[in-house]
Image 1 (cartoon, chains in turn yellow, red):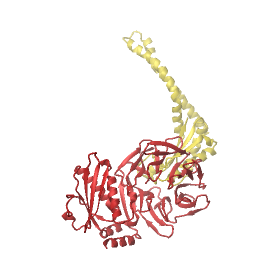
Image 2 (cartoon, rainbow over the protein chains, first blue to last red; image 1 turned 180 degrees about the horizontal axis):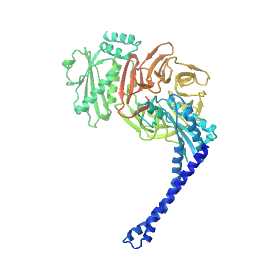
Image 3 (spheres, each protein chain N blue to C red; image 1 turned 120 degrees about the vertical axis):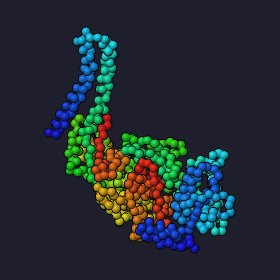
Image 4 (tube, each protein chain N blue to C red; image 1 turned 90 degrees about the vertical axis):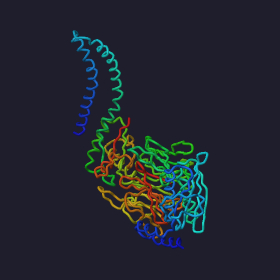
Length: 189
Length: 416
């Protein structure tokens, strides 16, 4: 069920996405069409020639769009691989985070199948020593084990720990510390 | 006699817990010292800056109660300034700018009998004046017959986090007055001096595909890749001759300690526990201490290289995640509170492996990364308190702590 929702949302996203790519040349062409319809009207000549030259550019942009789509696809898929948060001084996956890992496994096995996965372990600010880095790594390792148990090849997964050196939040609040105890997913081409 | 009394007092106070009370009492027990400036070159700002550096260094050697008043006198005056006539010691110095822009300093140390010690110093540029100040303090300490403060002349290397995934590696003097950024940009952490001469260092680069250990020769500015590992890669210690390294690596996501031979590039896995084993240090060529989570919380253990058994070293504290060893002494970081949602305190404690003696060395904030000086006389550490990062120094035999704040960024790791 989940899988089909994800797949259909991906499909919709793709449609919207490809729709956008198609639209652009149409938009650009519109004035040209209008020009033919409203032949009587004025000194649009100069503008028309500009539009023609723009149409050449549009073709180039289309090409660019295609080559960028890989990066954009990675960015879009990465958003579906949601960050997993951990308890203070712990590296086991909390029950409320299990579904996030399962969702990520579905994406990794589905639309993101062609990419390698990098798991980045992070910690809160309580300590900058090696133990804290190791804790970040064990968090990444817990997520890796969960992904592998859901059928993802371990050779696709690499890990790194950033310890406390990669905070998403630097306030001195409990909410902030909780946001930093996390494992982020990155997709590598 | 006063000095002797002072020493007896210091030794008796070693067993006390509250360091602040000691300092106040000891101030009365130490001999007094005043500083007099006789400089002929340089502006007032620089003259006062040098005075402050010397004042700080003379305080850190912990042998005197140093007078903070700045006074100017003629270098050749036979007697000390009127205000200083009751001082036990007076240190007079003269700074002179050389033709080659060098900084030349001449000192005279007066005691009740007249000039007791004098010496001249020269350094190529005035902006590295703090090293002259440290050397003067080193010499006066030696003249007074106190145990060597060789560490004062050593350089500290540290990594500073300036933004998420952005760090700098900086070489500094122990007071952080001198700071030279050796590696700007990138994500480089855990610097570790590669030899006694401090001419090269190891560090972890997280900019590569895998965490990578690199070696940078400061004199040639040449960097080379040493070894990489998935997950984690840290050089935790370098042995006396610089030929063996203790590394933390995690090729399968499992952080363990490895012994690495620099000459043969061969590595040997030393720990096999399924949890966390990190931060190994050489006790000697055959034994190491390290931090392990094998009790369910981080604590300090030791083992003989090649043997399977480990020995728990510390029995106090529920989360001891970092340590440094010198002879029979271990200084370690212990978590004092374990609240996930409140500010936590981490203090440094000193234990002897031969007695049950435990001494708490710090009182507030996050105190971590303890590093014994080579002679065991002092402990350098990182203190993060509120939003301020500092390097702290503990004079064990004098029961005194000094802090030198970092102007910006957060200290990640350091070595000296």
